[in-house]
Length: 299
Image 1: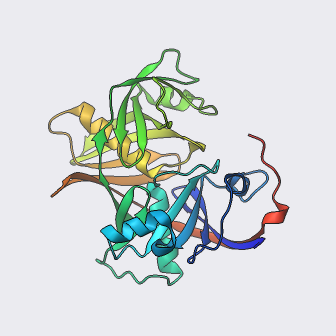
Image 2 (image 1 turned 45 degrees about the vertical axis):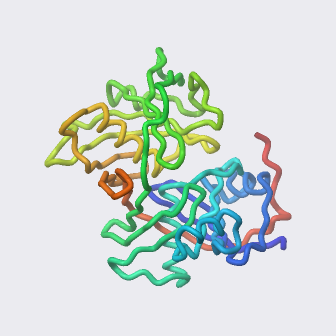
């Protein structure tokens, strides 16, 4: 199979190439996925999503044993072709694809369960687009020192895992945030074995208004680079800021990134506190790609 149909979609500028492969017949290499996501020689995207039925994916089959309603599996890859546990913005675009293409029916108030490498994720429609229950989160080890261009001195970063690993760094001002140069991956000491996303955060003025927290954020995603938005990173940034703020900090946050504003909510469940993410998800255009015409990507 040399020609494949694709759809381009995004969630607040975090963009993806989606390919429907319900029966698991398309097997792309890491290099091919990197070529597809390359912004100069391919379609261009922050990530690649194969839309496959859970029963036809090894990880999806395990998901079905946990949640039989998770019929579809989000087979997600970073822009460099490496696999990733999941993607918060990607889950919402995945839900938009399934519902807009008529692959599932989702009425207001109903829940759509999908499989990811980080487990089952539940989504619902809302006024902004879709809301996804990212699941349980945890503080992840000791602080690390984060080095990046634009900061004269390394800053401490708090480790937070929301299904994938993050380090969140607090900055002193909006000017510091704007002056960051994120063309290269920030250095992390000690370096995590599988890498991590890094978020840089500045509170808004005022940080809390009418019981809602407000922060500004930029992010460097492992395997991708700086992106306009990162769903799990937005959750990690809100969780870290609440942690720093201490007792009395709100459980509802609005996070502004270069691609727009997303909502974060922390809420109690029987198995511990979960974090949820809500925001827009759009499909932009459809196309067909001839794999034989892809140019080699030098990285």
